[in-house]
Amino acid sequence: MDKQQKTKFNAGLITGLALGSTLSYFSTPAGKKTWQKLAKEWEKAKVWLYEQKLIDDPDLSLDEFKEQLGLNLRQSLLAAKDSLDLIKLNLDQAKQKKSQRRRKLRQQKKKKFKGI
Image (cartoon, rainbow, N blue to C red; front, side, top):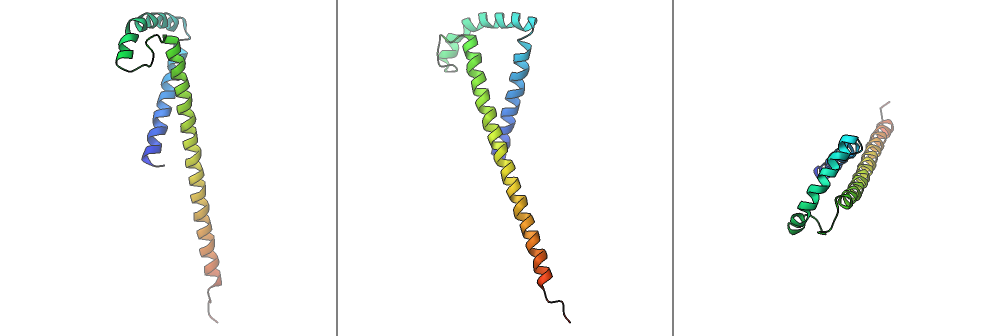
């Protein structure tokens, strides 16, 4: 696994864990109250966030932002899964090549003339 693939995997994993724990928190009664407070603060901050080009739409609600974030997370996790599948495939191919080389060396040793 090269450094770039490790970075992508780690970023996807950390994001997934963070969002998963965050979403489970907001499903609790205390989390729902916190979400309502965040929604009020979001209304105050969204114009500034738009001006800073951190969001694309100044009328974006907190729930819409959460949905966009969830979609981005899903895409990121799918990309990480694809990267892992590719890494596994490369490892399997490397193992097969190594096995084939060992088999070939053993066969060459058997074919050598051992004398009379």
